[in-house]
Image (cartoon, rainbow over all chains, first blue to last red; front, side, top):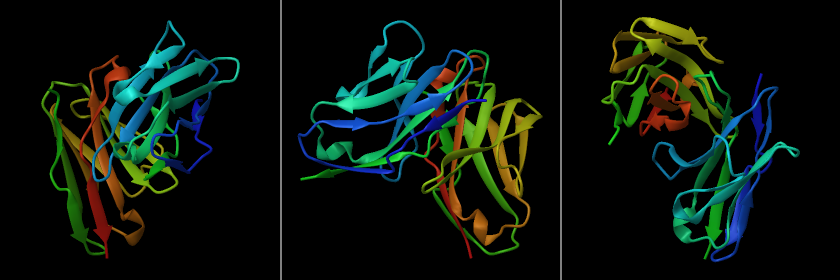
Length: 113
Length: 113
């Protein structure tokens, strides 16, 4: 079985400050990891993904995430946030041969002007 | 561009009504999914279909059924809507073996009175 934990349900951050959204996973096999973003009143769109190779993954809108196998983590970071980054962010996990994603409970990022 | 469309953005129904939520994708994807999104609970899988007329229960199938008569269309059915089914419903699809490129529809916000 696989699972994802997003410990922070809400993260307020001042505009232009850095942010880190935390994600920890649990799986007995090698994983594929994802971050999705959901802007207000929209569906989910893929921010970035880790399948293999380099543990530092860069995504859209200046976001990046680092896969840490020993810590079973895949934290999302951005060095300087903008008002437009206000959204809900979901971490998800799957593994080879699994057609389904398992999602975390989401982190709502609020940018303070 | 892959498009996943959902028949309604907002829907209001009464307790006991039969409710149909429709999802259509235009990229010949084998796999289609229905999720339910609730605050603090993230996305939970209701049903999954991997081919026409094929379906598999997700984590929370109780109170729901699905239909997939054509490859591009996946319907979620609430046989007798209840107030605890008030939620955001998200449809998604991807090619078989390509969980890393899952596309989401914009969602249907269902309110059951």
